[in-house]
Image 1 (cartoon, rainbow, N blue to C red):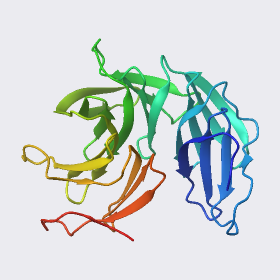
Image 2: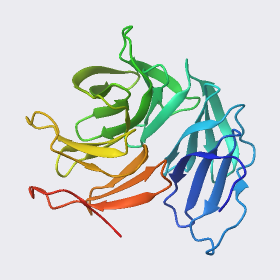
Image 3: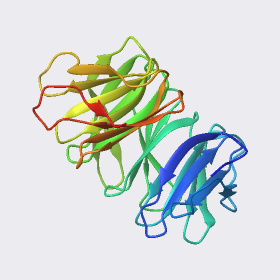
Length: 271
């Protein structure tokens, strides 16, 4: 599938008629059915949704079939995929560069260009801001990526100078978060995933490398490898099959097969 504007973000729906959704640089959202015939076709865009600047992040509520979009114009939109119309729109203080939805707790996490993470309540519309993390003025760098461990309510954020770990607590009408860990990095951290089965934090960097950290009392990185020739742009972790999917500015998508928990050797890329 080919679009005229460049693609800045991607999300998938997991229903029977699965869609691949693409945030585009002109502020629109492109889509293509996962079951579409093989070959190159011209992509279509969702009706009635258009930002005034490029789309920077996407998230999907699989149960309600809601699409959350963020843009460089500071706006956040909620779109009903099944009925194809806008539900609501709000804005953040600065553009959201990363977005993560926890469906069970009805919480939307947005990592802002300012380095702050805003938490939103998605149980009712319009979206209600619950808190900002951290809640005090602090010099932070742009958030590139987020991941979340719902079992422990732990949020992980990747930025230029550090990997940060936050404990997030939620009540019915409020949330709050506090820092419980920070791993300083020399190279810019651009992506992060949480591997729950081995309690590892796996991070991608602007150099194309990936590094794994075990968070249970182990100081420093567990292992590192050169995953790509250029910046790692996105990562996805399949915990059941222990597979890591990485994409990069080198225009390559790679799948990494990790050893069983407790085995001491590096992951292996698929051919």
